[in-house]
Image (cartoon, rainbow, N blue to C red; front, side):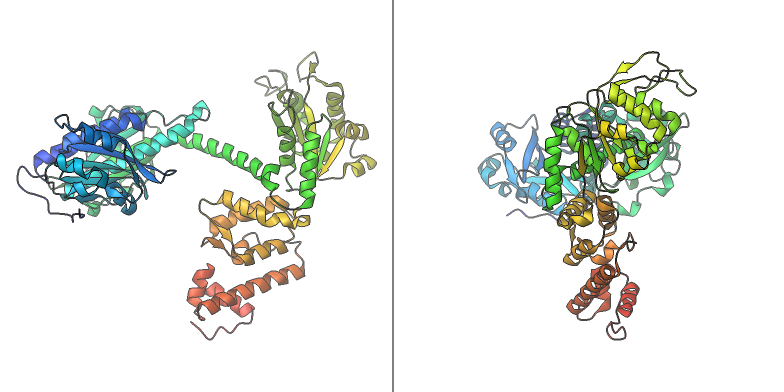
Length: 637
């Protein structure tokens, strides 16, 4: 059976892998692969060239590029390269169609351990290919992980008919190549995701954005690819012999740890400032790997300009956040709850959406009135048209007509361009007027005319413009009472309101609290987190004055500050004790926490230090709580 070789001493003869000739080969491999990664746009383009460059430079007969297929839980052959002198078409064909279960074979061991593996009897590594491997006299093999931080994305496997010793420099060189390819695969993945959004998000498709620089321990640049001109404004020839501080003034803070030479380094992303030739400050992302050659220490850095990318990704994440917010509060997401009031509301929403009736959504702050409005729009015949939302309470009186009806360029000071206004933006679609009850009385007349006549006159225009938006309103006030006190025009009320939809507060639909909490926790956390039974009981006891919005905020904070996968009652205290919570509810929460602490102490045999760690508390905090709950604090540890 093949066995993993231990790290062997570097050979010292001129023909050995530690000779100057082999140093040149390693540098050639680095530069050639860097060139491939800077030119290729897809893994399909890059894989065969990467295998060829490494195989030729480092003297291998076969190179295989394995990619992890998470869905199939297998390693699949992305590509295979054979030396031109190799006549083993059948073997190459068999490997090309191979699919290895994870943790099986040489690539599987690399995937499991994340470490480079060398074997001296390759014929035993693939049982289905043993006959062919023996026939072709395939003797030695090395397999290196393709890494992205702590994740193994795949592996590159190289096979030789000759015996090979895995000396220190070859291992570091091949590890560095695996890191560079991993960064390339991540760049390709991000580029593909961004390509699906608007054009401004397609920032990583051009592989030339990455800079590859090799420098010595003093920071003197020995090699730079042509991307330096695009990112920093310097041609590669201008940088040779110059100090890296020319590009990264504060480089000393980020320099690699030289005592890690010979140890395979994970890919570490570092964000750092850079300097363009014209003096502009750049936002950069870099990763560095260290290697040794001819008794000297060197480092290779991959650097990219992420200024525009960070802005684009921030915009993309904001868009995704808004979409998740809508989905999280839409009937399709909440209907799994059992609150009869909400199920009844969803049924009324579905029926009202099919009509053209004016709709008023009433409910306390934070109950999700805008989400109900979006659901109405999405289920209506106008679903394919625009949904435009405006908060009436936030519009200054002097800008009301401009905001709602639009304006013509030059119609007033500051009108430097034409503006459509909310009614024209929502023409043919839906216009959602939130906080309609807070609209000033004198502005209600202007709104009434636009809704009643279905025409508007933008500021600066001398003619009316026809419009046809469907109006949906929302308020946390009783508009009928506002009509009686002359705070709201009665004629506007009857023009706006045909159907009234009331969103119940969260405290009146307790069946929804736990399903909603679990859903928001899942959206807020990158890791799997759950609520302890005691924490769920705390949520059910709470009065929720801020409704669903308060619950979501609490879950987001709990996801951020949780110290373990299961969230405990103590980790729900970041928002403080609610002002509306009754004394009885407060006492219930305290009793739940006291029982939970005592149970944890019992499980830890009274060891307070261990119990504090399990509870996610400082030991001093636990002692204070025990004293408050009149538990003996003198005994125990």
